Length: 174
Image (cartoon, rainbow, N blue to C red):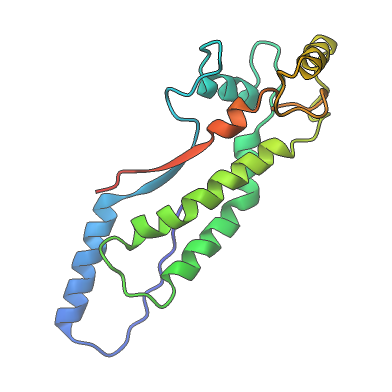
């Protein structure tokens, strides 16, 4: 995610401009980043890594069709996220921690956006689940072990472990 900062010249002292350049220089060195995904250590009840399964689902491996929910979220929401950040920055003096505070404000919303992409993934995209997968999900539903599935043909949600594991953090925070 990139940022565009527009500086407009106005009246002011050289000292103010020097302080501004110093603060912007310090911010550029910090390079805080918002990371949204699946934290290390999140596992399914059988011990399988949630991040590993999410990766397989996202890129499509081992017979699992590609379901690029992460890319889709970024493509559909990045303009909204940038607009949110622009609204935070507009009219504010650039302060030492403004970028980190802005990213902290954006984190929960971006997490929800990724969860909604997973939740709303169309059942037949790119293809329906295999009959064996549908049968397994029906058995889990019947036995009360499938917490998140109301339609066994839905992809990406079975036990709701993956969708509930979505998290966010600020990297390179100084």
